[in-house]
Image 1 (cartoon, rainbow, N blue to C red):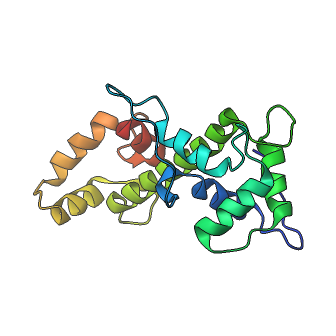
Image 2 (tube, one colour):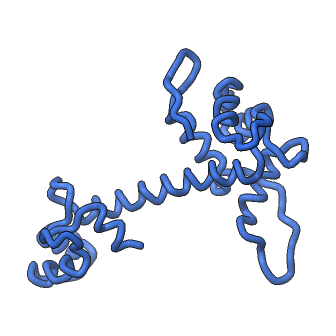
Length: 181
């Protein structure tokens, strides 16, 4: 995905993040129903539903104008056609000026990864209470106390040792990510 500089009438990279978030099935109002299958749902069933919502003419592709009309109705704001054209062009893999289903999935997956990253950072911050950028035995002890768990500093040091990959006595965000996977 390209990062676009801000220019008159363009809201910049955060605008594209907002669009990717809007493409998420969680944010869609009144999507068309999926055909019912008796035993299972196909992979990405909710994404297929959202894709069909945006694909107004049913041609299997989403144009910038379809995005504009759908996004405007979903969020009660007028989105600039030029910005949506930039988004489509930056994500269009076959150069036809429209988003195919695979292009659409890539956009949605980017947003989901960003959301996971935000959630992990928030969880890390709950344990990293000293503002040092890592989890210490003391900050872990305080966080656990807030959760109703009484542990000694020594207990917390032992907990940290299990995930302290670089053996520096603390958990960095990178180590926290590995621990949470």
